[in-house]
Amino acid sequence: MKAIYKTLILSAGVIYFTSCSDFLDQSSPSEMNDETVFNNTYYTNLALNKVYGDLTQDQTYSSFLPIVCGLNTDCELVDGLGVDASNTSNERGCMNYNCSPGWSRLANVWDAMYKLIENTNLVIEGVEASPLLNPSEDTSEARALKKTMLCYRAEAKTLRAMVYLDLIRLFGDIPFKMERSQSDLSNAYLGKTDRDEIMDSLITDLEEIIPDLPWAGEDGYTTEHVTRGYAHGLLANIALTRAGFAIREKAKEERTAILSIRPNVVTTRRVPKCTSWRSNIWLLSSTP
Image (cartoon, rainbow, N blue to C red):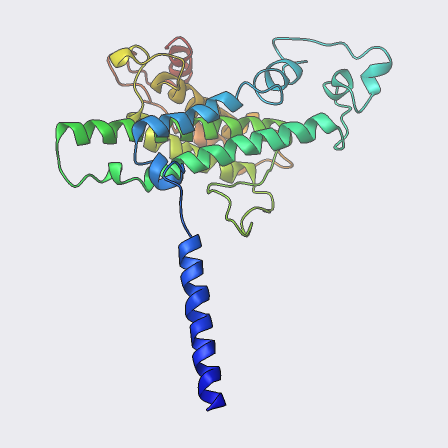
């Protein structure tokens, strides 16, 4: 009899705790999860706007990259004189090739840039899993929503490529992460990838999504967002860097072959078609 009572009590306890677990496992109606955000173009745009907002940080494109990293280039010059020229933890010393890996500003830039990449990955994966890309009905509204979502994905992929190119310019070979971080951090700690492999992937990515981007001025689209012209220019920039503008430990035989990747990149009504990649780059630089 005691065994029967124990079995009944144990069964009741299991049922009780199971029911409590189900009861407590609730979601708020106002919770903004992936299913809610990426099933709506308005919320998807807000998620993408967060990426644009991160571009304005001092550690990214508001200060460090255009100003500090712009020193001692074709645009700006900082002399190597004075005590700070050999200071490994100072902007003047760093831009005169006396930089220490332990300089805190470099770590801040690294963290901010990979935060940007993580946020672009969230948008890309969210859009690709969205039901709006595979509508159940072929209506004009459904096609318009799909076009908008593809544009958002193209913007995110272009921004991700831009960030990776600048990271390569700063650090050379770097970790290459094209997916969101898992909750168990199983894909968070990665080794570095050869910069040429990264640029090859970025070139393929951009070639795929460029048709999804509008030109500046098309249907009211402005240069406050990534345009097709910018994506073409970025693609040409990455191709040139891949072809040999990046410093490497040793020369690679295929480095010149990449120059033929975009011989006829522009064939639209806005920019005439050229057979020279040099002419293409000049035309792209003057295209909105």
